[in-house]
Length: 515
Image (cartoon, rainbow, N blue to C red; front, top):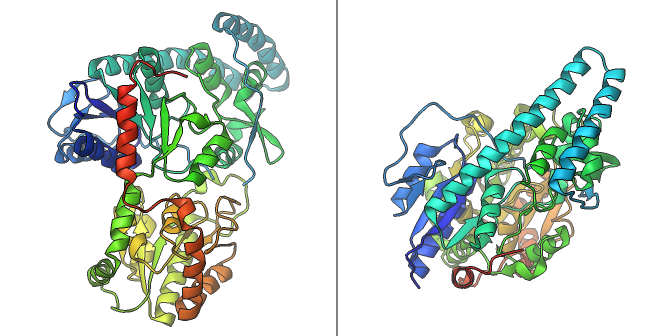
């Protein structure tokens, strides 16, 4: 199938690009479509490197002004970091959705702001008055800013005129959400291929860690919760907001919110491709329309299947390139991310990331030495060099950009409780140990055969030692993990074909895109 109109792959954050680029290659190879990779942010952090990666795969890229390029972006001053809020198993309970007509919303908001401001003035003096003024200024500024950003995305979409828009996420109030709104209005079909796992608990955890997202954290927060109750949710006995009051009000008054802010996939899309039936059930439970969720698998599932089929050769290559011991078990660790910014006031095992990293590195090094096994760290591309210094000091080998290879070829896997690549390990039937050192309380992987969640450093070391020191215990855990592997992903090598067929159907159904 071929068409003169390209498919647009829209990218917001650089962590999305590896998986989205694989989707782009699938569209090119299976369907013979031209692909444009659009970097939506005006200050995209790794534009020179990522635009070069897109061109190296034979695609063109579009900048935030809607201009197509056939050369990489020129290096410039580093853009400010804007990592997406991926906060950390009780989920928030959102309020009832209620959206007012925009004109009425503006009038009521103005009326509501005055007494709210007066009430705040009566209880806060000095700094409080400045906070109220700042919220009002932010409200006015954000309305103009959001409208300008949305208009720019509309022009960008018009310039590309795609047959299909493909995204990996759509956080509320971001360029991806605005792009999907324009696609809907134009009748352009849209497909979401989530590049990671998202859940309500994460959003609630993030909101609870931020004082400015508490119901009384900012002067306009109660106004937003009163006029638009779907922005508020109850989490751990407290009412919190998805965004600050001034920002949520600005989005509502600008007419730039169409879905539920608490649903990880907030904007209506034509279809959502997911990796497994379990993920489909989770999406539907969170509020996504079940009739638009299709279990296809994702490109990573086919890569995992291929690596599993040649695991022996892969293991030998891994051991050779990392300086390990041939014939000994391989433990792969998804190196823990630094999420202390999201911990808030919650008590966790370690006072800071440096202490946490030392503990993980020390535990892994001791397991390697005591049981004569190979330990390899899978390091996320966003991880800074200084964040793996403790591991480097202990000569623990680090590998970036190859998590699928490491997981498919390992004998056992460990990482944080809730890491997005945990499902890969479970799909491959790998015994998995999750250390909940941030006390997130995730329950997604609780009671999963072959997966164990631990909460102390002693349990962490003991759990790894049991598998590393006993071939029988490892074999039993492997058998147990295999019982539920299919629930986490179908490794039949056909995920790409199913995804390509879904994409072809979406393009063929252009003009029928809608809610």
